[in-house]
Image (cartoon, rainbow, N blue to C red; front, side, top):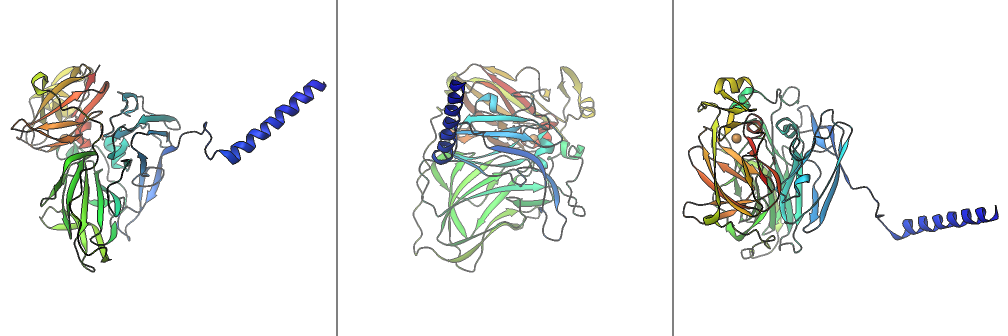
Length: 467
Ligand code: C2O
Ligand code: CU
């Protein structure tokens, strides 16, 4: 009796002590649940004022989803909570990631059912501009808003006045109701250029603007989150350099030319100096169909930062080395793109069955990659870990395709045999063959697909296995 009371008292005072310690000593207890990312419905004002608001599928209620930002070399943890009525999963686009965390429903994980969750946890080896988006029925889920920016910071930030993330979006809305136009798998989008929108915006706003002073130096991180639109961009009232592509720093900053092309899923990091004088607006402008330019982001110039512009910026610090593949030893693969409107194809294998174009269309398949429509049961290639690979991309269709490899960055092999910069998504133009090369150093099952998501859903998806 006596002993029991004593024990209990000790135990209780011990608890009190612990509680006091936790409250006063640790701001975040070690057993804290990871931060969450909730896929949920929301209503946002996507269209300009005066038009109805839009019901979207979002992360955490905003469009784009919350900016996820972490230092290079750290581990990112997010618990996805699915509050939608449909299964979903999250892909961390461009991260050299542990395969189990890649978020591809049906390949690297099961889609997360409504009401359930999934813990994502992975290392961030590379600094740069990345993004995350749904990878379950992504043609519809990304078009409804399920994407957000993912920024990995260098230990030493470059010398700039401001860092701006600009996530370019493209939405197809019914202007009368504000609702997304349906269906998302309209045969016209599937067979042509994908689901191109009628409302373009930045960071979820039709009229996203910035203010800056003349001579301010900004880092602009452009992310194309559109499901199909290829942006042709130009800067007005600014000069600058491209410093990174698809997250990866260029060895030497490249002075901006007349135009920038940003295909779906691609990123470009710019360092720009505002040259416009006070009162004259600067802008990031996009080419319109009629060859005019429309300001996508207006920069109001207020005052002057310094009297003289600064010299060219140094290169961003390189990410951990990815050895250029040894082309003389490389396995050569051929990726032939076929199908779609205007070009078509004879036929392809779909779910193990050889079908002609008409039969493929009846099954919603308009495209094929090397004679295979849709996700094949076995991989397009089985590679051994560390194996160098070169892959020819031959576009026999009438459309451009933004080809994306998961898990590893590749380089373009130029006609003269030299390497282009590292990328995770490359734009392939009809009748202009490309070659890419990489070292298959990340083990797992990796998707290779067109990031025009309607194309991916109607044939242009395959995968490779690295073991
Ligand atoms: Cu950005 Cu397969 O994805
Ligand atoms: Cu495509």
